[in-house]
Image (cartoon, rainbow, N blue to C red; front, side):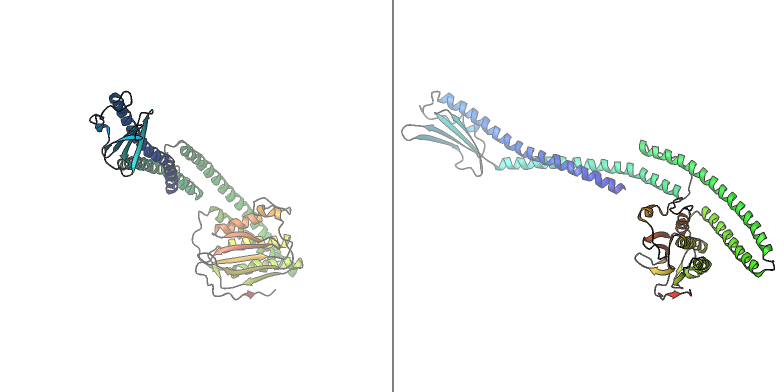
Length: 433
């Protein structure tokens, strides 16, 4: 950030220096030339005064006294005085050097009697012009250096507090709610720090209340589920085998629901995504598919699990199972045809990933629903709108991501990190339908 601010300020300074320096250089160059020409004109006027003093009527009465005129001719220059005559046309008097290389010429006409022309070498003028340009360049570089120094100090004064505020916001996002009394003397940034202080207190209070509420709700749910399980346990001793079978199935559902509640409570208290041991993805999904095959069969549809059984990913098994169960349930209620849960390795980044895809053959997701499909509380089918939002939260809690890869027919993809996963084993294994 500091570098970007510094580069922006230096670019602005450089542009300003060029905009001002180029006209200033041209002005200095022209000023030296004007000064030289003004000096020549001043000398011509003084010479004309001497000529008029010696020839008041403009006619030649004798030789012109050059002793008073010669000092007015610049070193290395030439003065030409021309007297028009009726006999040979003109009389010319040369004073100074015989010829001037690369001259600067100024002339003065004194009516019809006398004309003056003064020449001087241009080299001294060019030398002065180069000196003027050097002085302007020195001033430009000096001002640019001073500007860069000020820009460096300003960039540090602005960037360091911004970095501190950004780091504090990042710590707040990670659950560090410690107050930071530092202020930086910049009104806007200090205001942001004050707002972060207020937000820290508010967020900490809300999280504490939510954790307490989650604990209370989970306790009440576990108590009610325990009571339900006791009733089902009594039914499991009934003489009718069909009733016993249904009771055992219901107890299995209660046990899975209890495990899911415990996992959600643990997820709500997680402070980060610590490294987890890789698990066999297919093995984790077998139970989900087995559980949901019966509802699909009752709907006249099929549920298939396919993929590489050796692919592993560092995820929490219960979170993955719950998230995939949400996607399969979504495919059952809103999709059509065969629902396929496939596991494969994907590449394209620095590390290989494991992708779990849940696809069906239904009508898919309408275009207007796509931007909001993962929003909590949003539902187009009359449900609670919690399922997909919960699935994404569970996957992201393990560092993965859940995306809608295809709209029609719908295909949801779960990407899981797979450090050390074998990418060479890509033989698909399809379970019995």
